[in-house]
Length: 101
Length: 198
Image (cartoon, rainbow over all chains, first blue to last red; front, side):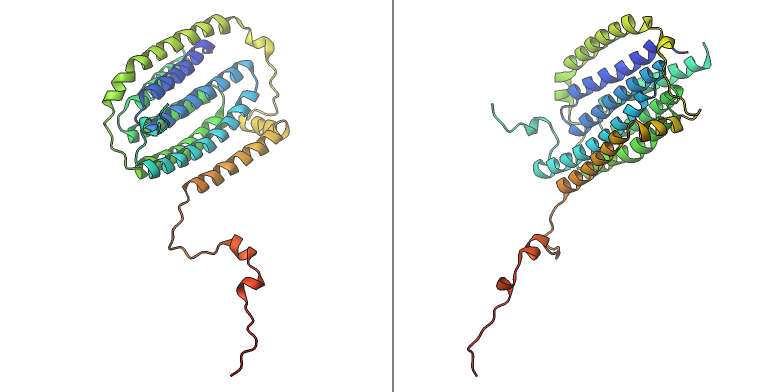
């Protein structure tokens, strides 16, 4: 049996990589959404790992619901992205700031 | 080194590598392709963890639907690529700092906490059969039936909002407006003229 900390460290590395990706990819909201998908993947990883080690199937049920919500979320996010591109002709984060505060 | 550990190390190394490629490649198409690879690799790791149904669902739903949606959007939007060096270098130290800090914090916590738990003492699995799919389906349709219905409602909400957001009215379309059709009454349409004589 693989020690649980190996799996947890793997999911932590994926999560922090996606956080760093959100900071790095300011020019492209599309890659930012992809980093968000990676973040959801690492959270699902944690649910499955701990569910497996605790011998409880509730973690997998939770992952099922998370997958549902993420599918709806990415559909809405990409629709918003298309509307944004139609209005602004750009998907740069810096072009979005219209409030001059 | 048993076969399970070797499989884990190979696939986790590849997974971290593809995740790194997702956030660093200059072309969004390459990012999407690498994200597809990382979903495949994590599906293998989920199989190793005994979640067979969810690993198949990850490939079918994510790679089959969500990532295809991403690729469609990448190809629909006319983005000029490879123009992000300035902002990239500006935010690179912050990204590296956050990566190291979060990793150190969380890994320190994990190593100190999770190693000392006796996992066999708290097992409370509800086994119906040997099949993972059957167990999961039993739980979904008995204990979590209301949540299952709510998940369906969320998907409906996603469909409606995506259509409403991206729908563009074409002036050439000759379809009827139901609201004005229903609200029309006889007085607006029909005028009876009396008193005319030839």
